[in-house]
Length: 605
Image (cartoon, rainbow, N blue to C red; front, side, top):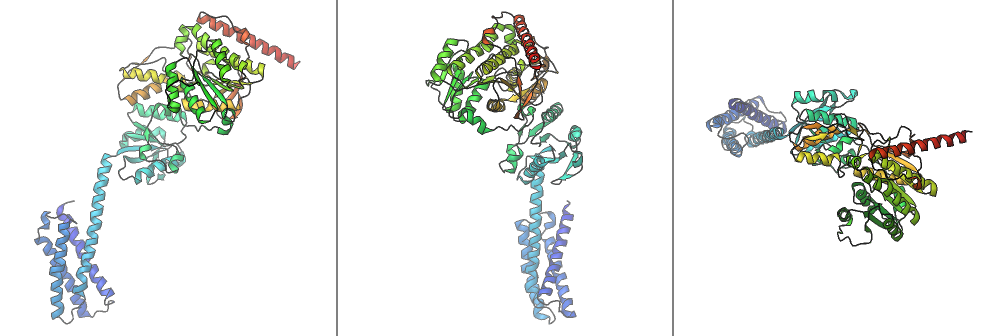
């Protein structure tokens, strides 16, 4: 604003302050009961005061900007003019003029000074706040909030109430047609998700805040893909429950990561039913040093088993899991067992010594390409090793046995899938033969496990690329390790003898989306190379075989299927090639199907 205009406005406001002071005095002191001569002198005195005030303002050189408005020096100058010039002049007039209202020179100047001071205080507050808001706005990141529901409202509230908000909200995006053009905390809903990129480019948004607490995986993947391809940062929120509970602040908003590609589904488990079969029991975990085994160990430890025996063939991994549970790294306790499940005699001795009541069998070889090259190794561990663990469990009186399987066992085409399919069938046979709660839990990939795509991609990115993906359309089921283990424990509680319980993995994730997200997080320019599907690898995994009929289990995220039993005595000879492994599975599956048809015909007859 030009200086002359600013000064003119200020002098006008000061004149108004004198007029307000006049009205206040004549109202409170005289109740407007002045005679005409008194009114004439009162108005004349007010005009004189305004003139003196204006002249002093000009002569004090304020027009040159010597003193800033509402500064200490400027307020002192106004007060001096009012008290030391106007006030004495008023007293002189009242002393020599009979009709001059005596209260005017005593009351009016202080009142006028109060009104002028009040204006300057409001002005100073407004200017300071506007300057601060301007500085904050320039530093804040312009954002669009995706989701105009309760979560989005909470985010906007947090930003509005922040002393120095890191974000400047441009508006909302929501896919509900009923919310279009509505306002959420004074911010408009500007469009749907289809308009996101156009809005971001037009309004200059740099970041998108995904504020949907239970966002489905497909939506999350779509938004992530759009933001990545157009250079927008993607930020996600904590749960609405955390926000309503007052346990969230703006610093809890975090950058989108790969785990968010899975969407947000509430994982609810019946802790009491899980505790009923493990609390106070002797529990043994095979493969306890692996990704799944170690997380199972941590979760089971919190449920209070009488004894938790950790078995693995890798001493370093045993050391790591023991440290993660109780900080004890000595490895000299009885419940840390170094053993290979390929050794039946050693297993039998261990089971006989510890007498476990519950067993979680997580030990396995799982790297698909390696097992394609070395099928015999996969057979020895995944099939024969499972046979050994089951035999030791039966002999020592294990009541509850949970075999960890894989989605690759459904319509298996790889050595990994075939060997795990045999493991499912062996487990089913022991359940039927002994009437025991022996069951399998089948699920897909877990994020963050050793050898997973995350591990591989991050290593390739660290080296500068390229990142290798087999096919641009290849998809996989993913779940976080803690979520998978929670559902494994729940499946163990609700499963019936011989069941294969299949976890709902949500929507499959495109592997290329995972690669692109990790590359975006790194900030590097990394190329993606497509190498083609490997032997035994599927473009899209399935959770159920074509011959399986899934049934509800009583838990919304767990289904159950039955698999044909396979007696340990019918385990084929050691296969030496991948084709022999495939032939073994085909022969056994056909034999089981024929037996099922014969049994069904006999029952129908």
